[in-house]
Image (cartoon, rainbow, N blue to C red):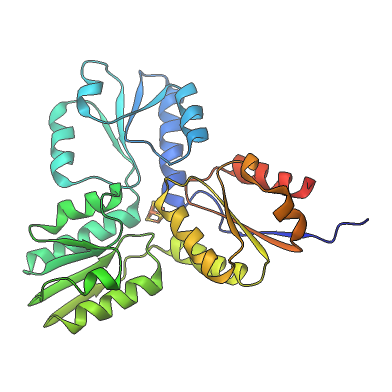
Length: 283
Ligand code: SF4
């Protein structure tokens, strides 16, 4: 019997420009062959990509201690770091390549500008996420991280507060959180720092997830932006599944679907997305 299943791949699926740029930087450095290339933390939440980088001699380290006396170059990943850590890295003496995404740097600058004017900072994001840790480094004492409006309701009242978003934040969550902060503070400044690539990806995902009967989100469960995409999809398409690899696909669920949407987080490599799409086509 002829298959009538349609598979729609989101145009925005896969690496965002910031991750793409960081990967290009390390590739060029490794090709130069002037000693080892270290990254301060993994460049992406993808075991496939990390294994590929390791094969090229690019190794993720957790601390500066690990690179002591080894030569080579240290790369700061797209998430960015705190000014304190930046000073430590500079003092360490190892050559540094800063691959912080320019869109993350814009958030650093926005936070620092308001801190200089005496504003407290509220970051709407994932506590402990590398980008958020970096943002807090610019935010001064008393900065707060909230995941959404519920947590914002428990914040103290501020005289002057500046609200920013983690760059991958969901627009609706950010706006509702801003509204909650406004209800309890005198002067509120808002920098909507959700990056355009994340915004575009989320909008396309909303559009697609509402029109399919199975939604596949490709990427790592460890990736915050991928988890966020999956949450958006589930609201519009209860039949949403995570695929860290093609092996995660449930054949019965795929067979039962007429129209399947595929999206992917900012750290999912094209090869993985294509693997999943071809596995879906084969069912
Ligand atoms: S998600 Fe946006 S801000 Fe973050 S690295 Fe990617 S492009 Fe840059």
